Length: 300
Image (cartoon, rainbow, N blue to C red):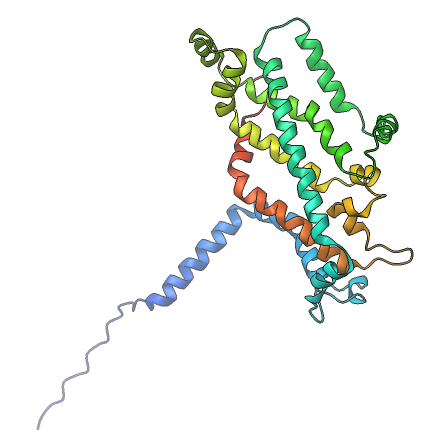
């Protein structure tokens, strides 16, 4: 009679989990660790992006829903963006804004760089007094000089245009001069002395030595001036509100307000048109902008 062999004991070796499940858990753990390490930055990012998301969502709402407390559109209305062009001359407003911001930035940089160079690298009597005057100009509210300046531009027949906002840029900007001066102080004087020994005058030293080394600061100053002019409402309202052909985007957005109601869906759609160019400019120039702001003020 054949005797059956006793059954073998099963080994208790641990079976490794499937590779796909292990990789998914590892990625999830890495994601949770990243969120924990950058929780403050993520919270700040959400806080700053929330208004922009709210503006975009409101721009797709109907006129009645934009006045309600709902944050998500019940029905999407991309035609709001076309309505902005039908009800206003938005291409002209954008062009006027580009003209104001572009020329104002170019003129500001062209006039502020030599002034900042003179305050930072040249030794002349009254230099500290002049720098103190620049600081005082920064602290002076624009409303104080609004009446005499408006009277002057009205005398020359330039009210109703953007020239009263562009032409003053030829005489420099106090904040731009201050920012560029602080950046130029970080440039070692040895480079300038070497250029002068080689026979360079002050203008040639400025454009051949200082200008290339000050490009990050110049880029940061240009972006500050461009953003200020692009978002400016007070200046265009003061000088160009009487002539709709010279309105900027900020005045065009305000035109959606009526006596009894505000078309918030159209206002936010026009706001998106105003925000997108600024975001694009900052995206392509953010490296120079951050470097200029970081290095400015290192040396007093």
